[in-house]
Length: 160
Image (cartoon, rainbow, N blue to C red; front, side):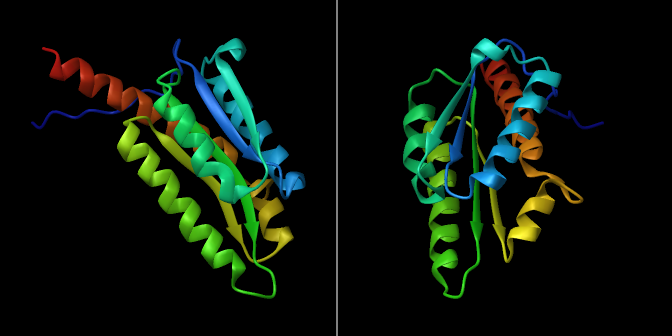
């Protein structure tokens, strides 16, 4: 029987950071509400959660990277909404944000989760921020909790 390592969905005593894009805040505030509710329901102490506002999604990676490298947080949750307009501007933003967040996560060793909506319309974004498609802020928080726990277990195993 193979050994299986799975992360628990318990936030524990670790600190979490949430970086939220202010642009499209009608959407991002709902994502934030979902992430905060999820952290709370999974045992995170409110005093151990830090929320940092960024001007827009493009600025999420640099702020997330600074937080991850500080080693003060077990995970950094990034929330934003990039909505397609009449140009291809959104494509450039989406690719760079995703690449920047992944790079930060890999280089820091701290989970940096992607809760950035990449939608064609505001209606789609609202559906994914607590509407009929759920709340992607909740999903990003769950991914942060689980990944932090998996990494913690792997670190404990390495020390044996």
